[in-house]
Length: 302
Image: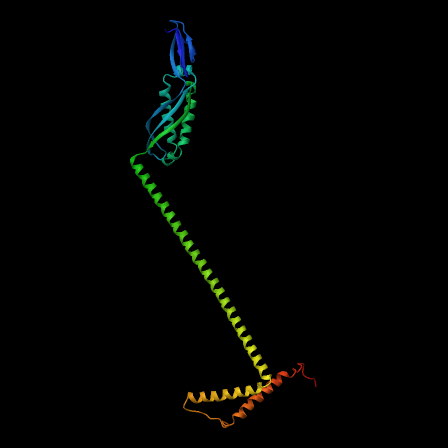
């Protein structure tokens, strides 16, 4: 029964002949010599996870922390793993602990949480060099948990709480500043819009007044021109005399109504003379308009 051997997949069996290493059996069916050959060691070639027990480590700033981890390894040489070391699981675990204590002692507490990848790489590098004669390959090492003392945890929580409050206050102040800037910008835009609206309103009002004065002046000029043309027409002079006489009598009557004291002109009875005088003034004004203007030139010399 011990002559025929079947080695499962991803396993390796070390065969000794008369107490001396003979060969390594790989996966498959093998025949051994009875009473001479025997299987001394059996190794799994799969990657194995080994739990590294927790231990107390001292950081660079003299803080004791408790750290545990997980070590991943694989047997590459079954002969070296059999004869190079007695118990490679225990040896790799102890070497990982000592290397971890050495790496933690080089950094401060705050950096231990930030530089896990650096610590893991340092442990793997040290283990890989030491385990090469053992026929092992250290593939990975991961820090599972970092537990500082309770007093340090309380201090870290206070620090984190203070940091959060500081960030909240900074965010609040920045929000208030942005709000004040937005309000000031809105007020600025409002003042600019109001001034532009006032400017347009004043311009429009000035243009309206100018247009009103222009239209009124044109209407007055047209009215005066039509009155002058009516005066020059046949019977116009008589109509003017009659109109002047009516206005004279009307205004004199209004003057008598406004106060107790009344100044009576000396020639009150001579209304016709007054009208005639006004008519003469109008005729002279018309005649002066029809006369050609004298040329303007420099005064005579000598």
